Length: 341
Ligand SMILES: NC(=O)c1ccc[n+]([C@@H]2O[C@H](COP(=O)([O-])OP(=O)(O)OC[C@H]3O[C@@H](n4cnc5c(N)ncnc54)[C@H](O)[C@@H]3O)[C@@H](O)[C@H]2O)c1
Image (cartoon, rainbow, N blue to C red; front, side):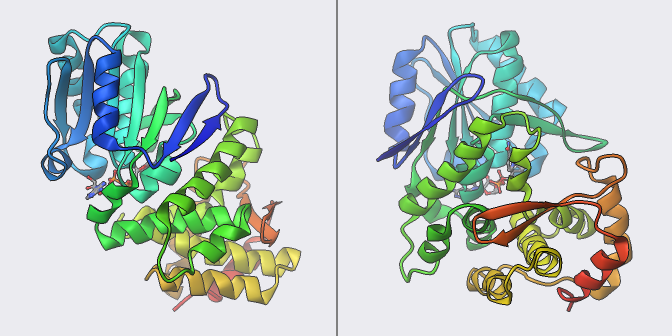
């Protein structure tokens, strides 16, 4: 078991190698009442059961649960069960579930304790770390939310054995990202014949925790976690969400690497390493040439665009992130050609 302490608006620890069922029992013992929020499929898959002071509410799968309607059903359950200030919520599932549960905890009675028990790789290394919680709205993804850190994040990596291969790979894109922006050892670990998930997740969480501790509310430094995400978000939207977030980020990272090669001299070897590592996990590394017009329009609509200027995170070498600002649109178009199929 490994523990990472995260410094945030309230400090918390991330336990990598926790035992899920034991943690649920001990959280239930610590509070008068606990509400566990989990997707219906995972309640069945992991045989989650209610107990004397543990109630369970089931949610729809994936993004569908990040809605006002589902949040309202969680609030109603809190009322029905009688969740009070000293009680707690457990978010059990992928990133969509921890986002919803954290926001429910932030808003019920103006904030009660919550515990994140991420079960997907993306949830373990990304969504449950950093205190961002929230929902989607008609106007866009993740537009409603709050920064609200959990009491702790409990990662039982054995849950990953049930995660579909495509979701595991999508999560791997975020892990690889942590390697490129901060920790080259991750890039070695992902190439091992047998992957040591505990070690890999521990290192990736450390990268995010370190950044978040220095910049909780994303004023600048936290943006480095968006490596590959600027074009990635546009690709995710352009694909009408047929591509998983991590798959779009994988293509976005290849683009960010090529842009870094063009603007700050990132070596060709490191650019190629992006393609090799992503391909090892069957992640996409290219996108149709014909989509550039649509992508460039989407880039300008990104919520991170400031004063009409698209900002990319690049790397000048492994572990050295840089901000690529005011890149001329013809440069972007030319570099995009390098990642097209
Ligand atoms: N808060 C943040 O900082 C942050 C950061 C990154 C992503 N996110 C959010 O996280 C979400 C993406 O996370 P995700 O990829 O985990 O998606 P997800 O929560 O939709 O999970 C993907 C699917 O895998 C299932 N699943 C999860 N764990 C499983 C397991 N062990 N075995 C079998 N099936 C399992 C889920 O029920 C779901 O159907 C998005 O909503 C995104 O906005 C939030």
